[in-house]
Length: 308
Image 1 (cartoon, helix red, strand yellow):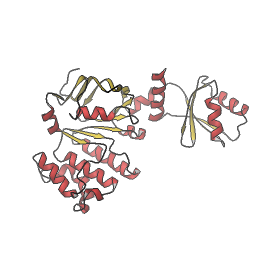
Image 2 (cartoon, one colour):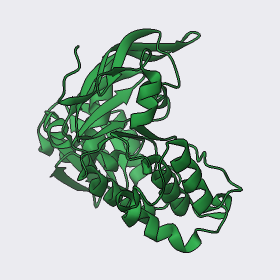
Image 3 (cartoon, rainbow, N blue to C red):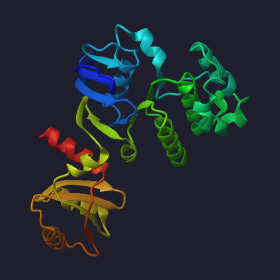
Image 4 (cartoon, rainbow, N blue to C red):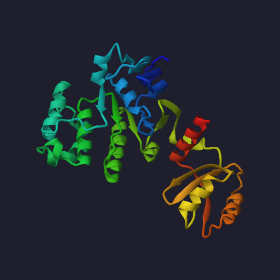
């Protein structure tokens, strides 16, 4: 797979093991310049290992990867100048103030806060009132904004964000993704990993990962379109009994709890069969409706198909 001017990132047959554990299994993909690309998957899917290889912090066992035409092994020093990296764990200096952290990272990259202030302005003004506060005393959402500013202060071509919204509240998560959309307008390529399926819909394209492999790469809309069977939301006054009955039904293909409903696919494809079965199991006041699948439904179905 050859890198082109249109591709910010090209990866070919990338593999990495930790002892007997295969963390990445021959990953191949390309990410276009200016794309907001998400790696979606649970803990242990291989997302952090992949990001550490792309940011030159870890060597792959096999395969190769290039960022803006630069090889992650041969050109690691140049790559570190053109990327901004925000690891999953808050890694700034806890005892330094907001302002001191930002000045420190600007100095490392041979720039100043003033030189690239316009790039981070919309984010920094939200934490500027706390610029004298030690970073360790900030809230989760404020730490997140500071870490993003520090990753952006040298105006990188590629921004790498490893589970940036884990552990922050819903409002901060929403604000963070709004910030990413604004940064994307500056032509920056952004790759982000997350265990939150709802964040997939906010990306241009996503790669669904599980067990070190990519199960599907596409736009969120097209991944959902690949869900090729009717999906039903089922609810009953006794959800525990409903789950048990549907899990043991010979017509059930898949059954997963989603909030107050159970999402169900069946072999029969006839929704009347569900009603007939539930009545035979003495369920009352139940509700059945066909629904449009979401990205999490698509992920669960892909996992099930891969295990067959």
